[in-house]
Image (cartoon, rainbow, N blue to C red; front, side, top):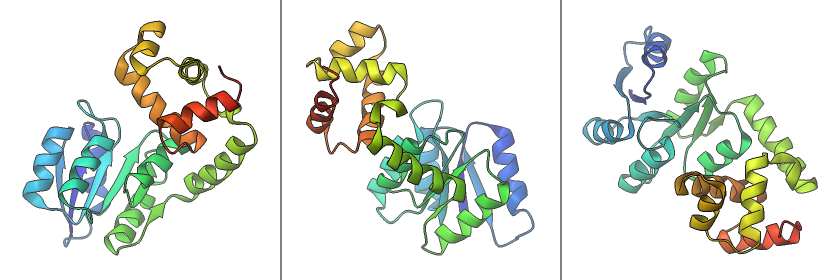
Amino acid sequence: MKILVVDDHPVVVSGCRSLFASDPSIKIDEASDEKSGHRAWLQKRPDVTIIDINLPDLSGFELMRRIRKDDPAAKIIMFSMNDDPAFVVRAVEAGAQGYVSKGDDPRLLVKAVRKVAAGENFITPHLAETVTFSAAAIRANPASQMTPRELEILRLLARGDKIVEVAEALGISYKTVANTTSLLKQKLGARNHSDLIRIAVEMGMD
């Protein structure tokens, strides 16, 4: 089995190598950012790709998007310090077959690799539970699950501001507002930008 690990932290890559060191049938390749990760994927065509969400250039989500454009059947596990349920849902909806938190028992990553390689899906148990309960909490009280910044962005969108106008009003980058808007869609179950605005208005955010 060929595994590609895309992560800019050498200790993480080293840890992954150690986890599979006892199995000579597994070969691990590595890359440290989105660009080298995509290049390595094209060259190696791994059976499973493990991607850190927070890469130094573009995000792991962007790398997954590019890989899946090349091969919709590519087997991908997102590996991150972030265990926010919205990130887990976003990863799965974007096509990831697995999601493992770096705070989990390392053996769960091994289990995830074997499950995904076999064509199954795998989310670590505590993350699956968190996603389930988070969805229920969001339906009951959406605003309680949002940060002050998310609430402020949602309020400005609800009053009709465009993303670029929100960025200017809050003194933050367009990319930050766009990424937060994507997460808000996940948290609120919005199908698109217009649906997000509708939900925000119904919540009384305008």
